[in-house]
Length: 156
Image (cartoon, rainbow, N blue to C red; front, side, top):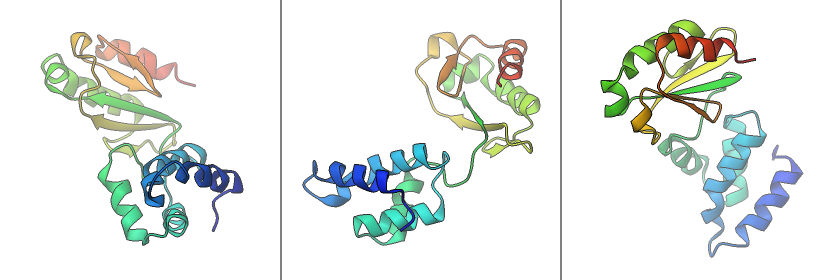
């Protein structure tokens, strides 16, 4: 098992709070993604399966069901562009196109330089200030292409 001992210790404490060991899988997936490079590698999937006494395909099934888990490396910065009805009506698709142009990342992919990953996401709860995107956990609202470009170009 290649999981760091600190995570194994954390997971042992975690599973003690649940009636079934496997109930700790989702929090463990989050922790692995946070601590092990921002994505879930095939080795991490196998290690979690061994820890929880599951088949790797079961862990893979959970990781692929939820959109917050990534199975491929992502860029240094994650741009999550909202495409619900409010954002779409107020220019969200144009914003997404411009974000891809500025970053060089395709929707659902990463820029060639590894600096940006761009994803299209459902409602992020900022409908009154559409269109918007989330850059590394920070909301940017009432965007137009010029504002978006300025924000993206200032990302380190």
